[in-house]
Image (cartoon, rainbow, N blue to C red; front, side, top):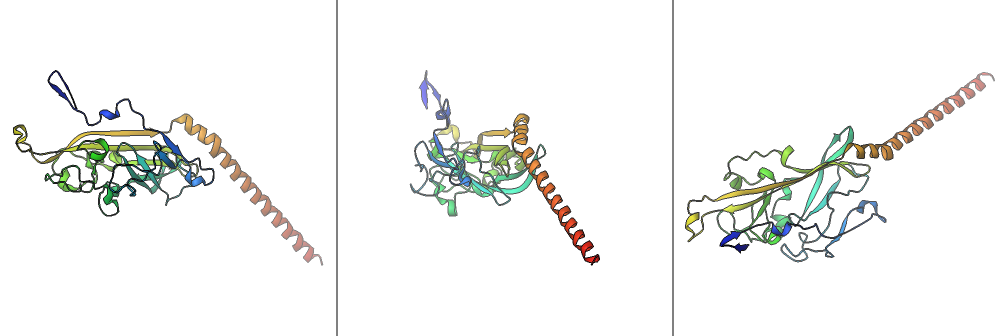
Length: 284
């Protein structure tokens, strides 16, 4: 907050201006290919100092940054992702197989349970932002209190408060949550780990309510006020798809052809041997 010519300038995200995403140290997968791209440290730290309990699961830096995935994935693959926008580690799970530009892929989704602050995720319950009733309590399902992350009373949710608690969503008119438009996902080519398509989506909100002794707020209703929602998306361009085809799929097709050829040769050889022994037996 700054003051200039008797005007107040206020921003929740001023610290993001002209900023980078920090310095990462990641695994090259030399000893275990499954660790390829895994974050070893961020800003030379292995733990955040944001959530409850300094060495809790919530504070432990791990996972990946959504751009590098290991090869050899399948329908049960899941990935931890470190998102600096919300200072939080989220888990993406494979939900189905799909296609992108005729390339087979797995659809990996950040699900409904990743915006909760209870049970095994109770270390995200910082109670630093007042809830809809004006109390310092855990925020409900679908919201993460980012006060300790952004140094302001901001709540993160999916866009249009997708999958969020009805007690909060009922205070907002015009919401139209749609998983296809508002979920966070990535489509990965399973054998190489190449990201084919994806979108990282988050909405920032604040709670408004009447504030005692502040006359101008007395006509406010208790509500969740959407500030902005952000989408970072990718779609692998055609030249990169052609490169993937030239460097991987074409060689795979060649190996398959060789394999089928060897099977065919083996079959013909076996049949020839069988005919030879049958003829030899008949000629006795």
